[in-house]
Image 1 (cartoon, helix red, strand yellow):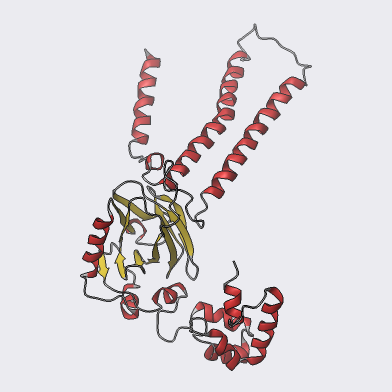
Image 2 (spheres, rainbow, N blue to C red):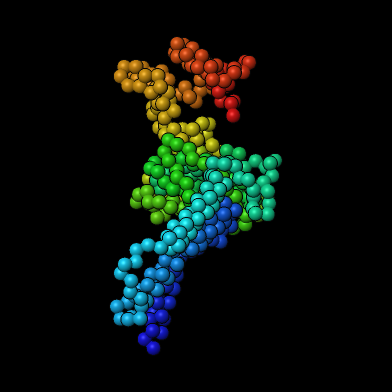
Length: 364
């Protein structure tokens, strides 16, 4: 009777512990997230092939060789068994090799920077379909989504089309933040001054929660958004038109005003994107008079600090975002341009009519 009561209490406690768990990872609506969920299950099962026998043998030996069991054999001089050592070492080694192979293959197949090889388990990727590019900017404490293809911007709301590949280009204007849509794909970091990438797809219509999955300050718990997947392109276009009806343009002034700390920020829409705005947010130079990070790296490459650094800082501001940076380089620093040209020609064959920068960027 006492044993039954203990079992009932244990069952109630387990139900209480898991009542708040949402196992969305194992029932995802996106192919990438579904594959990641399968990888977790396969890896767990393979590890349990070691863990469960060890736990069972622990209980077995504790019961069989307890002090009160006088029938158990006693052999104080026993110290070696080849057959037992083969089992103890070879079985775990085989499982580790299988687990390593499984993880290696899945990790490369699910590389977030690689284009999707398929839409779902039943549908191959259509090479004629271009992925929808969504540029994501993490701010304190909100998510900003830029759609360069549609010239719209949204805050704390995003959308896509079912079965259309999505290429997220992700950065941050503040601290490092974790971008995560559990139903769509795994987590990836948004880092200031850097661009990360995530390729994913949703295979079912609906509204799916997104979040900042790692702590990043006071507004972390409310830094959430919704990703809506429309079943048809017409539904998505209707949503785009709704966004375009918003009056303000997302220019530099709007971006600076938005890049202010706020908690539980409401959904906002903008009908246009200012020229070069993504590059300015990526390179942390929204404010007037702030040198962009790519320009600063150019300054460092040309001499860094000291008097040369002060000279280069003023001289090379904006060179990386110029229409023809090579022409500016030849004008401002001809000796550096000559050395760079010789270096590029030594590495790759020149392209007729193209600058060394263009020749370098066209190499795959």
